Image 1 (cartoon, rainbow, N blue to C red):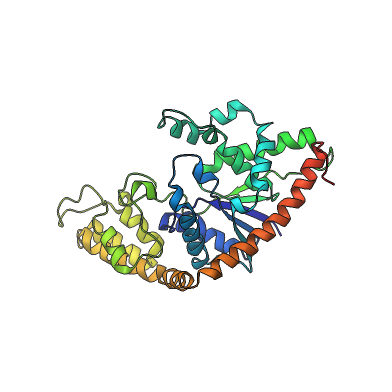
Image 2 (cartoon, rainbow, N blue to C red):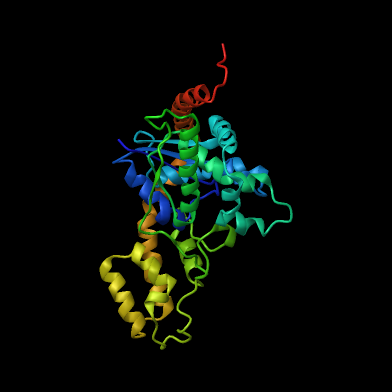
Length: 330
């Protein structure tokens, strides 16, 4: 089977942007691919972070992933820092990574402008991402549009390493291809930026119906609808975009018609969305409550996943270090 790898940062509870843009696809890929998924806690420390909450946020993300449908019997789920070979391979790849390519990364340019002193980890973030993928010799990566540039660097590093250390006839590292989802960019409740917990414009997948409604009620809609009687344009309204992910097709069509004719006000539209969102997410919320009541279950899943990941990573690293000329231990 084709092997896929992907990772997610430990931001705590998963939000609907994560779920729509990535995790639903991860769940589906378990049936058709050899799937390896990772909570990338080492990526989370490339900027300022709360040391005291990192472990809890990692645990919460693991709970959300399993509640959303990741099944440790059909995929490998683990925490990045539990497999030391991620950091080791990242350093080895750093020795062949072109500095100019790293400085051209869009995310690096954006984030480096926000800090007075740029940490080297921010520059080398894409190398660690490449190591995550190449360590398992993944053939494909389910990835968002904002990460495709990083994935291209991963392919470049695979080519460079293969050319320098690989066999002449058979490249050791595959050049992984992207798998993009239909929901490539989920806009936040502010209607402006991509959904992000740091911007406070998200809805968590395990939130209660009441919490969902409290967040949806003030959410941005079509700015042309100043009064209930003003007709709107659903295609430019983020609430309508969310209906297309959470509501039946007939409801989506009804929403569009009632928006254009002002038969509904924005609150009416949001109430329908809140109900459908709560119904869709109810199984995830219920499963997460079960997992929180049995913390040892998730810890055991992560332990089993890390053991499998360490075995696979060890196989790769033995070949890598041999080809790079290192002296074997013992």
